[in-house]
Picture 1 (cartoon, one colour):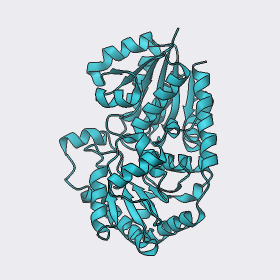
Picture 2 (tube, rainbow, N blue to C red; picture 1 turned 90 degrees about the vertical axis):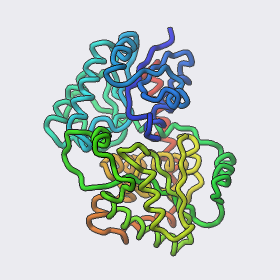
Picture 3 (cartoon, rainbow, N blue to C red; picture 1 turned 120 degrees about the vertical axis):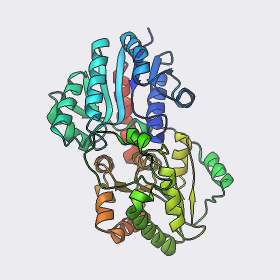
Picture 4 (tube, rainbow, N blue to C red; picture 1 turned 90 degrees about the horizontal axis):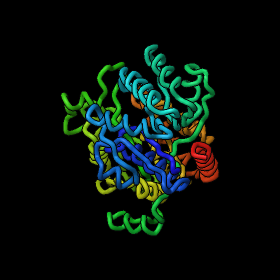
Length: 389
């Protein structure tokens, strides 16, 4: 009989990275079992159907009965991928996911943690609930060595590293990508083309209410500069240097444009701080096209995780601006741990010259990431085969 599989993941309705995870997981499962019954949870059925090729279940309390029925009928529940197990956004995130994992385990015999992002888990309560969630799982897999170091102390199970499944996204062809870029007024010529994908930054702190909930009651201002002004200033300084030294073109590539994140507004603020005509903001909602665009870049400065994964998969040089330890874990997997800087240190310590030097080094070195990415893709393929064998 074709397997019945329920996938529980992140915010695929607004986050391009979560869309990439979901679509690659579904495509891979379809490749292994074309007749598999796949169920995913989403608030935006039309968007999810476009990328997931699965039955769409409603989220939240209204959708809980349908989720329970699907879990009870399923042969397998996959929790992940993505950064689900952490407390840097809210202290209620781990209790929430522990409760979901426990409910799924009561309804389905097999629950597997799939390429989970784990950490930070600073609070004792977060580590307790992570232990409970892992106890409900048949297998615990995380997406990088840093996540493994955080997860292993809170479970007696062996924690395996399975890279983020978004690395499996198939890009649009180079010809189709160049044609699309030309339609946007971006010529791929001899000048360096630098991609920038960043998120808002502000001093971290323990919160009970998640940002996406808080934003509904206290919406962000029209510009994220109210809280991210120092980041905008520092990035404008670095990118202006790159433009001056290399005659580079800057493509600002937002990926999470929901109210509580506002990548698109942040990119517009950065564009307005750069020399006229030197930068463009491109809105891309298709993971395959986004990955194709990263393949046309000379370098990507990644302050978002999944644009960085896309670029590495296209053998494009990358420099990371990390808001979370997951960046260090991914760059460790690639064998270039020195090509990432913490955004807090960048802003607070004014390390603009150091970031500019990293970009300069990456442009000159042209790391060969294709082989490393191929190894990571095969690891994901092998694990997927073992899941549904």
